[in-house]
Each structure stands twice: as structure tokens, then as C-alpha cells.
Amino acid sequence: MIILFCAEQFYPLSTETAMLDYGLTSVLARQGHQVYVITSSHSADGLKIKREGVVHYINDKEATEIETNLFVLEFDIALKSSCGGYVGECEAYQNFVNSFTCDLLVISGLCSWSFLLILDSLPTLKAKRKVVRVHEEWILVNIQSRGRKAYIKKIIFNSITKGLKYFFYKPDIYDKIFTLPTLRHKIKISLKYFDKVFFLPHPQSHIDTYLTPYCSNIGVLPNGIFEKDIHPAKILKSTTPNQDWKKCPYLLALAHFLSEQHTLLLDAFYASSTKLPFILAGGQVSGYNLQSVQAYKSKLDAQHGYKEVYFLHVGEERALELLQGATLFLHAASLYSYKSLSFMVLKSLSFGVPTICIGEGVDSDLVVKNSLGMAHMIDHLLNNPDYYNSMAKNLHTRVKNYTYEKISQELIV
Image 1 (cartoon, helix red, strand yellow):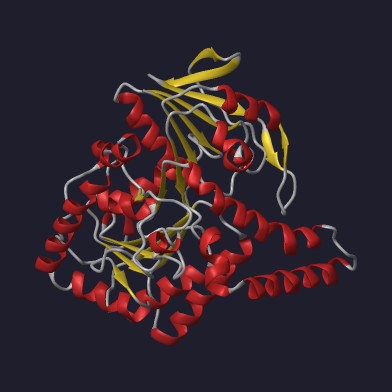
Image 2: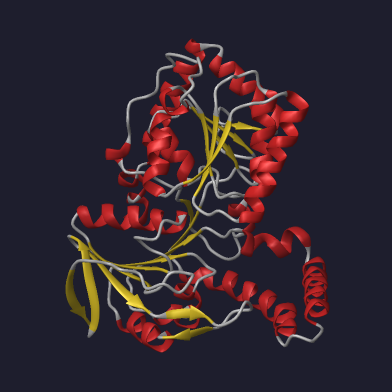
């Protein structure tokens, strides 16, 4: 099967969507399909992305074979402004997709140039079958849940605030008020041209009911991991701290240093009775956010007594090493997030590490409502080895349902 996969972000970028799309395409390529991925040549911060492999030419366009049967075609396209519009090789991208004959076209995301630039030509594309993977469900349900007037009021308020800040009228205010709602409606109408529309699983969304007038075939495509990355389940051997946290059990959270999420996790840690150290690690460090989190930690020390917390700036490789050695993984998902099992949660489960999340999710064993619930769960797991080992084993078994090898088959059925 010849598959054309259009994704604004792709390997070696380490964003959640980029890693999911890479996992899906890599597995499909290993299964013998010819997979062509169209993606950006630059990262969001404008840096050129380096991809290595054998160079081929597909319809006069350079394609790098990064793995057997997996070809990457880069287009230099960038966002024109915060209100939309793109600059760069837009026409070249449109012409390539319009003329490319394939068995399956997969588009990743709705708020991306890979989708928006071919929105008007969807009915005439030469793909035998077309599917879209939606990971921004809010763009389809936002107006219905809050109302068009509330949405416009919010945009007007934000625009006035911005105007006052810069002491001058901004021409994009008009576009934000009128263009975005129209575009959202256009996107929903376009879903009828797809043979199937995939969403991330979420128990509260009722997206299948809401989208019935727009598309007839809706599926679920969760985040995933590779089968080879699944390790044996953890066994709780000790909960005794050590002077060197690297040599003893520890609790871990992996996220960028966002004060909202980390204060929730710190509240849970200090409310628990554990004496184990807590590692807060992230890949992006804002001085202001880090200082805010550290200040909040000092406040909790004054209220509850000192507890051992380390703030680490780590890359992807070091983050995975920390996950592999962790005793518990703590995660604070947004209460309005539709990503019920994020990439890092799945990675923690693949290492057999019991995980506790604050927020909403599809798995009641994983999710608690607030920091106090997380604190109780921390104590329950660490003070009861049999429960810990049973939970680790059950979650380890469950994560096998989230392998790319399994979920990729949903695309080609």
C-alpha cells in the first residue's frame, strides 16, 4: 500500500504529536507499506531540522529515506501571523498533494498547514481513502459548548487588552473576531470528505454524538508506544531514602516547568507521608516559572517541614533514564485535556512504573481528582507492597493495548 502522511511536526522533533506520527509511520513502513511523510523543514523556533538517509526523488521532490520504506519530504512553510495564513512553499505543497496518487492519505491535526492548505481541494484529491487524526478536539466543540457570543466576547476582550498594551489598533483584531469562527465551521463541514475521522479517547467528550451531522465514520486512535519498549513491571523492594537520591527509590514528574501543574504535584507530595525524594524534571526551563515553583516549594517547607525535592533540566534521553529508575510517576494533566493517556504516561507504564494522574482520564486506576487524592494514592501504594506490585502488573498488562503495532492497524482497515 502507498501511504501519504501529512504532518506539520515529525521526527526527530520530540513533541507528543510528532512522536505519535513517527511511531505510526515507522510501524507501517516495517509492515511493508511505502510511507511518504510530508512535514516541515524547520522547527517551531525556525531551526533547520536535520534528517539523514538515502535521498530519492518523488515527483521531482527530494525525499529522504530515514528508514526502509519510510520517506520524508520537507516543505519550508511557516505561520504568517497569530491569526493564520502561511508563507513559504505553500503552492508547491498543494500541487504535490493534489497530484499524488496513493492508496491512503492520512492528515495529522486540524490546526496545521498540512490540513488547512488543502482544505479546499479535499474532494478532488487522488487518494483512494482519506482519514484525519484529530488531536485538537476543542476546535470542533468550543463554540457549541460555550456559545458563539461568549467566544466573540472573549476575543474582543483579549484584543482590547492587547491594543491597550501596545497603544495602537492591531489589524488582526478583525480577523480574530470574524475569521476564526468561520474557519471552524468550514473545518467541520470538510470532515464529510474523509472516510474516517480519528480522535483521542476521552470519556467526557461525546464527540461521536456531536459530529454525527458532519461525518459518518468516527474512530479512536490513542497515543502509543513500540512493543520493543515495554519492560517488566516494577516490584516494590524498598521505600527507604538514601543520602544519594540516584541510588534510592524516588518519585518523578516530567513536564516543562509550568507553575500551575507543578504546584499541584508539590501539594500532593507534601500532603503525603512519604520520605522519598521527589524529582521534578523538564525540558524547557523558564527562569520565571522555575523561580515560582521553587518559591512555592519553600512556602510548603515552612508550612509542613522540609522535604527533599530536586529540580532538573533534562533532555529526552535523560528523562527516559529517570523514568526507568522511578518508583512512582506523578502527572498533572489539564482538567480540560482530551489527551487521556499522554506520551510520558505511556512511557512510564512501559517501564512498569505505577502512575498517578490528576485530571480526567479513561482509566480510573490511574486518575485522581485533586492533590489530596494523589497524596492518599501515594501513601496507599508505597505503604502496601502487595497493592503496589498488583497495580504495576495490571497497568503493565494494559499498556500492551497501546502499542503502535496494534493501533496502526486502525488506519489501514
